Length: 275
Image 1: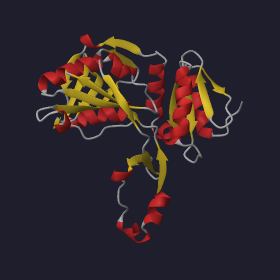
Image 2: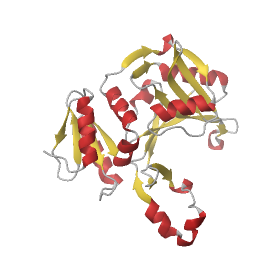
Image 3: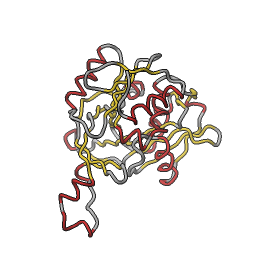
Image 4: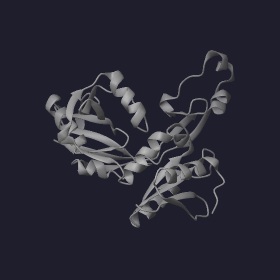
């Protein structure tokens, strides 16, 4: 079966050339790339489509019932983050070098160092964070985690505080066994908090990594509307959509609609580590 979309063909060829055997799975509406040697299927989603998140979640649920993980691969993600995509899929395939966290050294990082690492190794890149930590294998930085500051959760008590694990990424080609748990243990020793909360991106994750680190599943966050800047391939949530420059001010919404394309994700899974 051939693939009409050139970027999907590029993805399939890149996977096979990387030693990840894949083939096309017939489907009347979707372009599905099926990993041969492990239980992951990639759903190629072109930017201009007639799909909706409820439909994709239903398909994802069907695959989960068959013991397969369905990755929602958007066209813009592949085109702008292909190296990170291949690294993530290699990790799912179990092709990474495994390094135990106890053999690494935990260090506090500056914002530039943490941001540079996340830009290179995390699919969603860096975002603003209060606390930043890394793991060194010798002199090589092999993992980074960033956290928010704590905030009071009034509905849980006047003194109850919560912090968010915002980002965690390992260096491409590495799986750091126990690495996340090591960083969290250090974080909670430094910062007074009653829990650590985080989100797993349903486009890419089933949350198993959080469960392995002792987190408790707290529920699902619904799919979210996202705006893609067609000039930069950068994604924005609606409340963070930037204003256009002055020369476009007179055209108002029309200019936004020409530059920004409305897409979506399939939501998140919420996890909390109670301390």
